[in-house]
Length: 460
Image 1 (cartoon, rainbow, N blue to C red):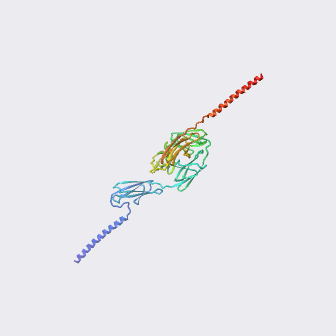
Image 2: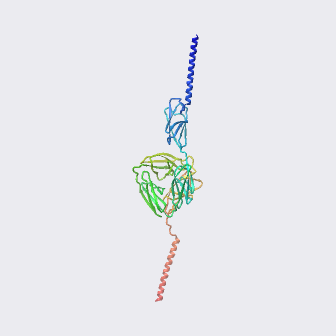
Image 3: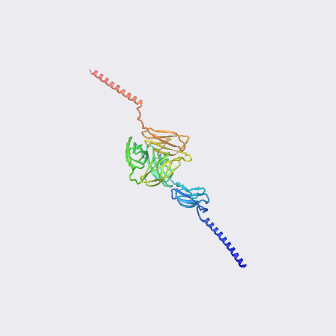
């Protein structure tokens, strides 16, 4: 009996130990599972996926705080895990991107997650002075405008164009780099217009961008006036063709005619880009550098680009910034055609595209000098209670004037065909004076003849 009792106790102890071991193993497994990091708890065997990509690529991606690699990358999730996940994408120099996705992907399902990263805004300042002072300084062909001396603030990093002009003087233009938190300086010595002429520029094919002394003057065929007498450098650029450059002499009160036949690029090592927008008048930034402004007369050509991927940003007052990327290939022309979307909130400013024939005319808004044509004016504060008058003037031509009220966010397009000044007709009083002088002369002749006749009679 005693032996049987001992055996019974041993059997029960074995069962108790087995139960204790099973409980211990289960507790260890639970603790291990709780301590193991994962995107979702391994509750079920079926999985779905998040395919995470970004622009630019190479950004760090994570799901619910757990890193899943650099974009583009794939994250695996269990379909029976806790629903709802937050995807985070970050890259140095860009704002961190976050988005919450409810639920879980279905078994075998791939959900595409795309993060368009926004660069951290870094800006600098451009200080502009001139001799004489009081000139109009225009940033990026009208994106902003000040009177010298003065400063452009919060200018994005990269290259920008500053044009300084004053009525009666030749305009000055320069490209200047802007660095974050730094001030770039522009000093313009303006040359008086003592004797001026014009240049008529045509090309085969048409729609080539025209630069005179590095200042954009529109697209062929075009007449550029208000140029000082002397030599000027004329440059034509068109996608798919070699850049055409020549030095041309301008004579006072005369028009010099240029007709250029552009040569296609052979064995090209570079590519080109043509940019257009609806509406036109948007500033074009390529890899943060200002390149020009979209025109209503045709696409704006950017030539001689090394092969690679470029970011393109279009900016226009009252519209959302348009951002895209494009790939440039040697010997080819890439196209960017943007339909700009109105900003969500009406702007307190308006914009205008102002051109003239001839170009190079002085532009006044409510008698305040603003610059020379062609001019794509942006950031102009608007007072809806008053009318605005735009006057375009050039020596030798009749002034062009238009006026009206402007609404916030409105886009205005003005194309002025200037009329040559007519020679003043002789005044009536001038004619009368000449009649009197002529009459006196005739009377004097008659008196002289009578005197001679009388002297002869006396002699006889």
